[in-house]
Length: 181
View (spheres, rainbow, N blue to C red):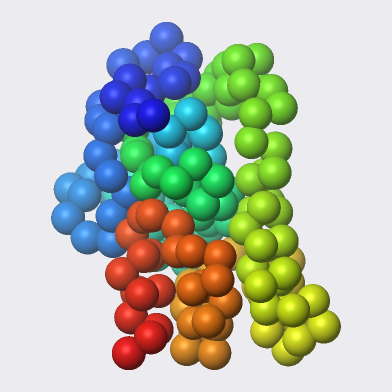
């Protein structure tokens, strides 16, 4: 299922969707709120003083606590993440809207995709494919335990593990496929 209307809106008009991308999303670095979903899985709701920079960090699997949920949501649904956003006049307003959107998500979708909350479904699949007692499994567990910098999973040593579980659709897919070369 492809969602063309944001599953949560908090009564505000959200722009989008746009595919989560590494480059050329053309989101301004202004205060705002954003929603990321893969199909029916609302994987992340956030706000920032610099919306464009924050969404780009998420796409790069960088210093962002939402990375595990977003890549896991794509893994579980098989659909690439989409982003909706709204600019606000202040960070305080963005944070208020974020809280309203998160409450709406909990009310409408409680229990849906709980396995993606900390990236657990993807983590489990990767660890099982690596062999639970292997160095690779320990490395995967450590990265997910940190909760950010999931780009460290982009390692040649993990290419066979990614082959076994399948690469989730999204901005990271091209980099992960390049591990084979």
